[in-house]
Image (cartoon, rainbow, N blue to C red; front, side, top):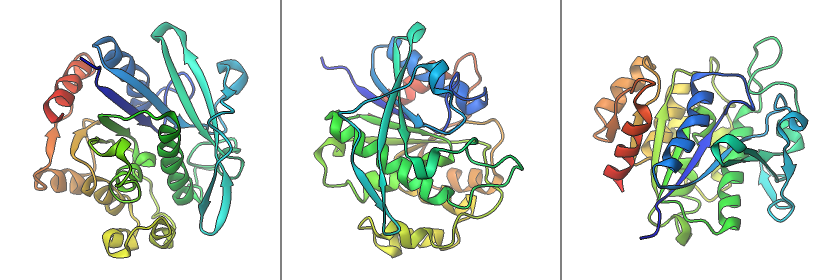
Length: 267
């Protein structure tokens, strides 16, 4: 029987970025799921604080070269890859000079969130999905980790809804305690609508706060996992009244087995 395929999309993965709750899960969960018999692919942004030389990133020429249009501007999509040898696992990186060639990830040196984080999240999500299409790799499950991946469910369900690679894909969205403080750019909905999405389907982010943004991601997902022990209380209440398939917070020693069982349940 053909192995089930799981696509992991994470805003951070150790050792490429400093250790955090998301970065640790982004590193160990794909390996654990692969060791339990599923085929995996893993993606993250090539933020400027990823050390390319130390981590031996290199560009994948056959996957690079496409331009993505965001807010009427062309942005070249560059794909890089690195290997975690001990895990027998490759990590793909989405890169672009305009969005990712800066020394920090989501905030500047003073802790201020970048004003274009909305466009960066849009570019990242579309970049991952376009690369998966180029790979001709049809995921059974897409598991998103961190708010920066929150546009992926929307694009799979709307922009790429007619692509046969995603016809049977189930989307799992993990909610973490990783809130951004200030709303994203107020023009975000208009920019997303350029990708053939009806404005009424994304009206919740006319005010793109963390809560509204997360609700949009959840409304286009098939299942949700509470990734942090404590999350935004309004989001927690929203999840519990949504009727979505839900997996509560799982402790570090057992979460990989619990996630594996959850995947099998929703397939």
